[in-house]
Image (cartoon, rainbow over all chains, first blue to last red; front, side, top):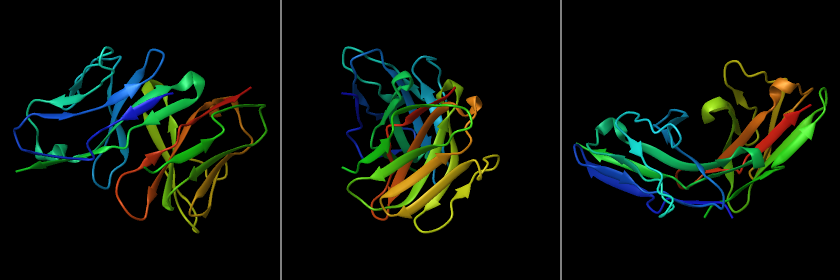
Length: 109
Length: 115
């Protein structure tokens, strides 16, 4: 079964501190993993794709197949990073996507 | 936790026909439901927002007569692609937000192929 787990519903850090949003998955094939972000009163938007290995807004995420994880990291959190973050696994050929429950990140001044 | 069931997961239809996709919240009342379409590079485009008992609010550029959305109850929203064309082939995802709590719950998506 395809599953995505974000163990933390709420995460709070101080500005300038490192932040890590956890995402674990279970999937039998090669996963296509993504991070989406939704800022307050804005739409859901793509933050990262694991296949591109790019860094957006200082965030990075490495796929660890051994630990079946795709944690989102940023070395120095900013107040504008406060948002809801969703980890997602896609298998579009099979017509299936799985989103985690989301983590609300609050960056305090 | 909250679960959203989306059906069908895959559908193939002929050009000119209509297809209905259902999105159900199984254990909570979804006051608001959202319909997304996935574009290349896996970005999601919000198509419309529907609130139970009222007309859906469509995003700019989305044809409301082509993508009919009905949110007749607090647990069911449907998206009907009318007179489908090959360019409508895509991956459609719904999500729901309950009256209480926070965050959004996503359906598993529907792969539509129009031939």
